[in-house]
Amino acid sequence: MANSAQAKKRIRQAARRTEVNGRRLGTVRTFIRKVEEAIASGNKTDAETALRVAQPHMMRGAQKNVMHRNTVTRKISRLSRQIKKMAA
Image (cartoon, rainbow, N blue to C red):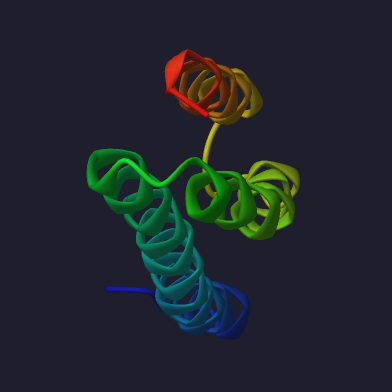
């Protein structure tokens, strides 16, 4: 257990940050799931719209170090490639 005031404060900060990052990651995953569902439904315009909405949230997650930036760019790339493959 922490003895100094600084260590106690660090524990509080880490707990708060963990909670915020968990919510951010959940939001990013929700947006990714919405894009994947739109792709699965076969509606290209819905999928494109969902990806356009999801991209800023995903990039913000990378910027806030919730997800690695390469992971985010890989996911965006793969989702956009799947959308391009869909029939118009």
